[in-house]
Length: 177
Image 1: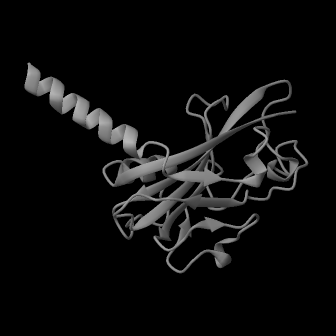
Image 2 (image 1 turned 90 degrees about the vertical axis):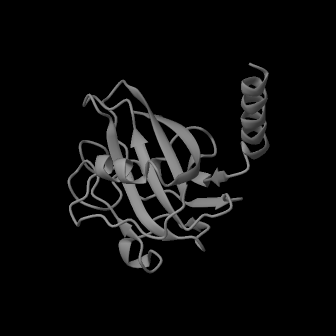
């Protein structure tokens, strides 16, 4: 019993030592409220449809690539809504500018299909009268590249990265109309 307790405390101690080291920042998410630029210009919304700025720091040792996602768990679909997915960002990447396009991504990086069925950023557009959470996450992975088919979905990406995640950093902003 004592050995088990020592192992548990050691594991907990390692988690505490590393917890919070990997950080994500975004001006668009800084206030906790989604900026109008990050709202869609479709589905009845009239926002800028601009992907948010991102910067991250203190990735874990062994990071070989990153994945970025923007997800709305409150969408009335039964499974949420994936607004943006970028995979295969090289380990040398420390952020993305607002409004980044596929052509501006670092070499080898690619956008994965969102829940619109196409790759690229799609801004928020919660149903009128509802407030939704938008969770922006960067995952540090222990693999250089994910071999995903051209029609990969966010669910497929999630399954593919589950054993490659070293750490993640997230920000949440709320949005309504």
